[in-house]
Length: 343
Image (cartoon, rainbow, N blue to C red):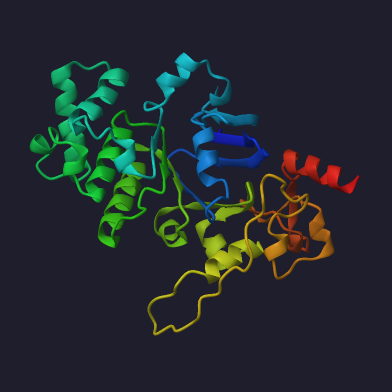
């Protein structure tokens, strides 16, 4: 059975005065129906750019330069603009990082919410308002009949995020892209929002693509993890495999940097030394090589993806051992760059 979302060799660059910044350099992954997939990695790894590329929200000087994004047979990268507008907010919805800047501060929350409903569901003004009140109640906003007529500044950060979720799920999308939905929220509100999204998957069959730098959040709610670094997928696999038997040194470094609680643990955090690669001139081999404690001469060439077990792949030469299988070539853009560097 075909995946709900299939991303193949996605490449997105920003063309600046200094040159081409290759933010996403050949990313591939899938999302199944009703599944919650986490994309993790430090700032600048390409998570948000990849997510926005899925529905062509990249603004100049950014440009999607290659790849294929298929949503149940529809190639979103080649859709006419009018068809794409019908898809956004309807079949695919996105929750952005900062709800305060995502909501119009001079327009009442209800007007912003009903605009989405009326556009895609063709409801009248009264029916759209009733639906908006129902959605606000569904996401846990108290007194929704009163709150619907208030402005964004009258809501707390957590409530504004709930409004964004209500807006995103108003048309029962097939895919919900959540970009750092719990950033700057307190732990209690964060847990409530994660529960809301998990419940959405379980009750409506909506798939969720959760972009975050917080591996702890991923461990709570996701079934699979995509680990990004330097514009590439370093490792991908089921949550259990990633947390219990990580195969890529970058994934291992991320896990060592998570504070451990409970059991009287007093282990020191182990930072990842060094800085991310300059994507104006990305390295021809593994982008993590300069920071990797296991780096070797072979890392000057980008490896293929090795599969430790079905569904668990790693872009690392260390995985080249008995029991690991070559599950495909490295991203084409990186391969091309490597060949230029070798010549």
